[in-house]
Image: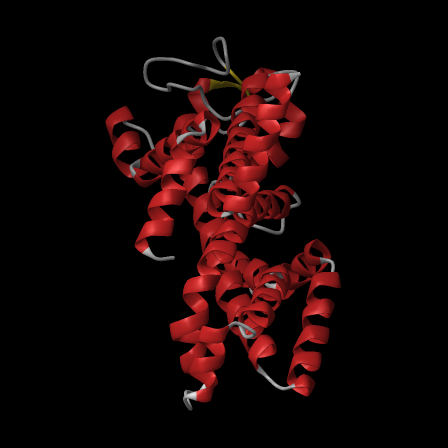
Length: 311
């Protein structure tokens, strides 16, 4: 996007209170995740140390005290059974969830943009082949294949990196379809036709003429992919084939929290609430970005608002 459209989109985005609140929440979460080592050091805790004295072994490992063992040393309580600090594990779990989601989204965008451009700029046979390959990728059951792949990879392979590769490598179909559709419409325009007639190669045309025009739909789709990838990572970790202990993950915490809901509801509510708020904030912000980058959509919304006001 050029400077003027980008500034206009930011102004439209700034006029949406829900988008500003969502962006603020996500910015705060990102700041907390990045500062997790410093914050846990200030609290005098870490996400891996067991505190057997803070749980009641006679009751199966339920934390001592109220609200899951909340105290001056453990701000959000401790994990049932192990006594590990819950505040530290939530912060480090946020690092894992955001890292996997952002990394997988970047992989999806890179593969999808390249294949979509190749299909839109290529000959009919190449377009047909890449389109069928994209259809296959979209139709594949990602969760089932991801479970199968994570089961056969050696356990010493870094799980966050493995999840980035699997989720990104299986989820680029939607990006490819969007890029191909926009490329096919853009190649009919005069400035793209003139660039091709001047003798420039297809990738030069793509880099100089098409990619700036594709920035808006790609950014919009990326905002939609991020919450989806967070849920996929949490689902895999919840099923036990994602991030493995002792590395913290919200999905992994929810998986172990199933047996503690009655004895320690806080251990369930805290990771579930953070996951819900994060996904909701990304979804609201993604919808606001889509509207801000599409003036026609913004215009339709303004017309609809005026009609509602006249009723």
